[in-house]
Image 1 (cartoon, helix red, strand yellow):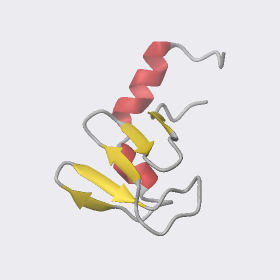
Image 2 (image 1 turned 180 degrees about the vertical axis):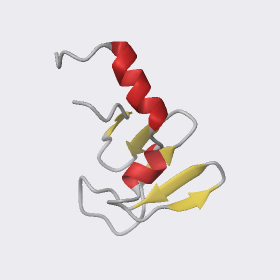
Image 3 (image 1 turned 90 degrees about the horizontal axis):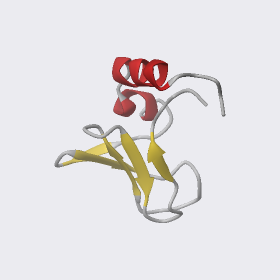
Length: 73
């Protein structure tokens, strides 16, 4: 447990956009309402890493990394 309350986590979450944060590390391209790019967690040639701004969620269909982004660990 990290000691941060759920209220603090939600405040940080709502103050940041997951697409802005992830795009500092991954080149993202928009397809409909979802952004796709190469996964930063494993080597790949075809984009399987998705970012959903509506739910503040990322997921990789290749290595199955994913979580609702909380920015504080």
